[in-house]
Length: 288
Ligand code: SAH
Image (tube, rainbow, N blue to C red; front, top):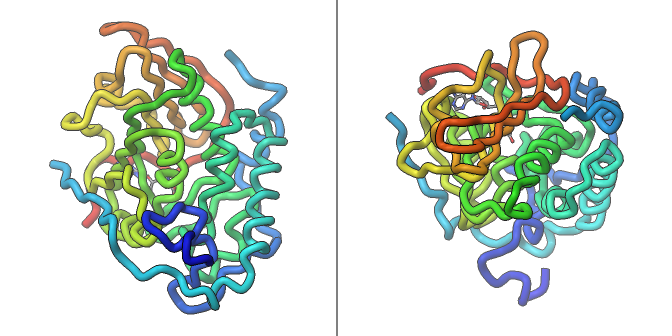
C-alpha cells in the first residue's frame, strides 16, 4: 500500500488483503461447493424475467491500517473477485454501478477465515447461528432491481432487513447515500460491526432489533431489501417506503419467489414476481 492510499477514510477495496482474524491469509481459491437453488435460478434468470430497536453507529475510526507485508497477494483475490463479478454479469445482472460495487467489496473478509477461500464461489455460505451470507448473484440482483427506479437509480436512504455478516450492507453503501441495516441476532449484529469497522464505511448504520417492524425513526426509505424470507412482506415495511420507493423481498416458505413492491401512492402498492430464490426464514423478535 502506498502512503497516499493509507489516508483515511480507506476505500472498501483498499483493505481487501487484510490478514483475517486468525492470522491465516485469506487467499481465495476455486473450490467446489454445493450451489444453492438461487444459483440455478440465476442461470435461468435471463430467460424468465416477468414482469424496541437499539441504534449502533459503526465507529469511523478503529483498527490500525493493514501492514504492507500482509498484502503479498493482492492481485490474487482481486482477480478472483473480478471473475465473480463477470459471472454475476453473465447470470443477467446488467447495472454497471452494482457490478462495480461487487468488484469493490472484499467479500472474503466477511467470512470466517476457514471459509474465506470459498468466498467468491457461486453459493451462499454459513456465517454462524444457522444463517448464511447470500450468494453473490442474488445480492447483486436485488440491488439492481431496487435501483431500477424513476430517479435513475438515485437512492438516498435504504433499509436492509437481515444484516448477517454485513456484506450486503457494504455493497449497498456504494450505491446509496445512507444505509440502515437491522439484525435480530445479537451475535451477528456484533459480527457485522466487527467486519465493517476496519473498512471505515461512514454511511452505514447498524441496528439490533426486529426488522419486521422496520425503522420508523429513520423512515421513509427509497429502497428496502429483505435478506430473509417471510410468508408475506410485513405491513410496517410497506408504510415506511417513499412514494416511488422499491422493496425487494423473498417471499414464501419451501418455495420462495423474489417479489418487487413499488409504492405508487400513499395508499397504493404494486407487486410483481421476479424469479425463484432460496433464503433463510424471516423471524419475529430478537435473539440475545
Ligand atoms: N445480508 C446478509 C444475509 C444474512 S442472512 C449478508 O450479506 O450476510 C439473513 C439474516 O436475516 C440472518 O442473519 C437473520 O438472522 C436475519 N433476520 C431474520 N429475520 C429477521 C428480522 N425479523 N429482523 C432482522 N433480521 C432478521
